[in-house]
Image (cartoon, one colour):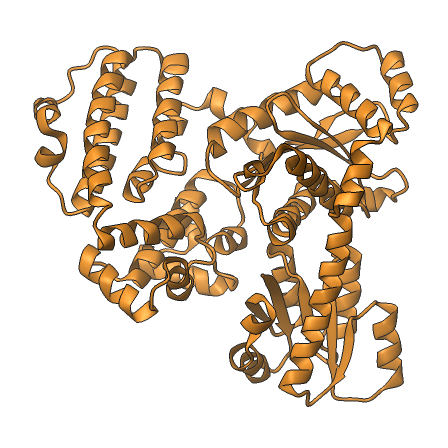
Length: 542
């Protein structure tokens, strides 16, 4: 499904187009609104948009200025211009900026839908060509990419080459890379759908994904990539050598790299029907810091993403030594939180979370009673919360292990705590797996799992679509089973996530708002203050 942005300084007109046209009939899943070119650019920076419909005459930046800015940064977006004036100069400039269509107001509904559908066909043709099997097969059988892959893999393994040797090899495989250049590393994991395919098909799909990546980064970057021994794809991202110094500085900003990565995820899902997860490294020098970048992204993938799907993580340079210097148990409190995983029944993720918690205890803290105690109370708190949230009693869920809970912690080693945790977790897991058979309980778990994994777009309608139920019926069932309205649950989950991000990350307020699904930062600030009594900035400063 495609995503559309409508831009016009008349809010009533925008609202009318959003609500009254049958966008889903032409494969549009989400329609965003903006009332100025500046607001439109903010949405474009945060959201992968496929098609933009914009009025020409607006205060400040015009629609023509907007599509000029779009062409400079997002070459793949299709633009449709609306104008109340049949002016040849407007049409001429529209053609210069490769507008897909130029329509005169007032435009008929069918005329506008047809224009958007034509833009969709143009997008499909372009991406089908990029990801075609023929192009993928040609890449597989080309010798030069294979030689480049061998060289990059040897560097990732830490093979030692002198500067002269490396420069000679780089020249031999015709790579436009300078020794000592700055670069980012992107680690990519292709996920479930892709590896359900046959061996021959997966090879083609892998090359199709890489071709899409090259197309997205093509204008300002050079990509050098390889599949490593763990099955990940490793991309080195460098600025093209023909850019000006100012442009190089702009494109080597981590935010710019992250935007490109988000578009890669979007187009892979849209055109190849599968998901990928990505980790972006801090900036480094080639090849001097290559192995450090590789170790960082590998470690972060295992510790912060693990078995979760469709994730994008950017490593923050300000937190380079966060793990080593922390005086708290980072895995115990880093998202996803244990109580959220238990609440949504993500049992594999719970297993991984506990493994990371105990790995950190064993490697960093040793058998420190203080940290054993902290871990014990945190696990018991999460478990108790989940049990009571599901209208169960602790004594019924934990059986014989309940006595240990009543007597308090008497653990002297991490091994003892781990053994007890595994026993109580298994007892509770068996109870909950039995309850899943109940249809209403299964629905609630699906709702909460979807909401936690799709927080930005989660709403009563999207969740109802996901579980194939009428929104009114779903709302009543959720309230009956949990005692909490679905809208209240979503609001609570979003605000709790925002509060955690404010405490634990350096993300800007508007970035956090976008992460949890609020495009208008002012509205997010109002909701946050209503819940916590302070603004997000005041909350962070405290």
